Length: 333
Image (cartoon, rainbow, N blue to C red; front, side, top):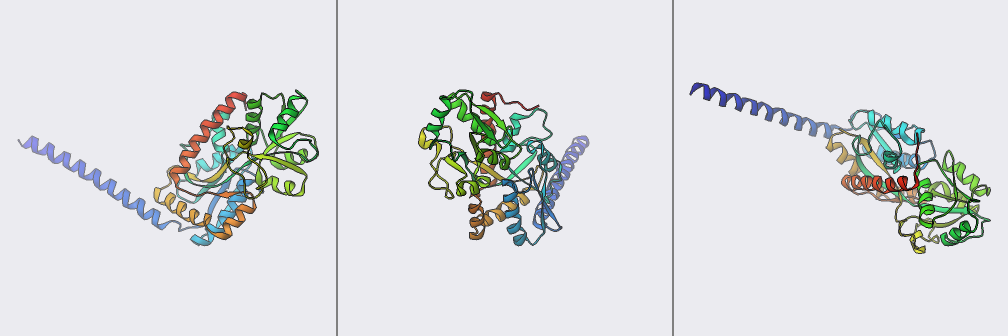
């Protein structure tokens, strides 16, 4: 009888200790989240160079977020490796809310594009918020005698193997959008990758490449100056910055119903309370008239929403571009 009693007491003590530990950890986590941010600075890692779309977004967010939370924020550019250098650095950072990652759907693309990544798009990061969406815009040289995607397709078919399409870089959304157009209309056209959207646009304006899918922000100035001609955007609705430019869907390209997303992540393991606070703060920014004007003038459409919404979008994007990577047989060693 005594032995049975001792066993019961022992088990009760084990249960009680476990409960206390979990309770303390829970209280600590809540307190930790409430105390954030209590030190400076907060880092935002951008896996791209200054002036790129994620960099523009990061600097816009940092300006408003710094004022809201009363902490200094520095933007750190880590270009190279198709985004993998910056992604890897962010993945290795402590999950304490003092390292943020502002990146694009390149994170999702790289999951199927590269082998032996040192991070995982959905396991190494906690999504905070989708900040913006921007269309891929199909542009051609001003002198090319086509006015819409169908005319461009016919122009390419009449010259098999003689024309080319550029991209900001191998494996980017711009590259895969071009491959999707090529695959959809069975076009015989050569891919020419560049090191960045700026170089690709310069070559397009000079007439040395014949078409290009590119995110809208770096293309706006050349579109407005008439150096390049926009034929269509990849999103299901027209963009406010270039409202006269139709969508690809208006010409029957049903697979073009996407925009290039960009958003904010933190390393996995970051307390949920900090993720929730960041989500709330950035949602507030995305509803601020001054921030909306700044983002829309750059060609972005502010989005916002929940962390779960963003998590689902990241997963869907991995699936979408994996199919295109396989169809186009894109490989990067």
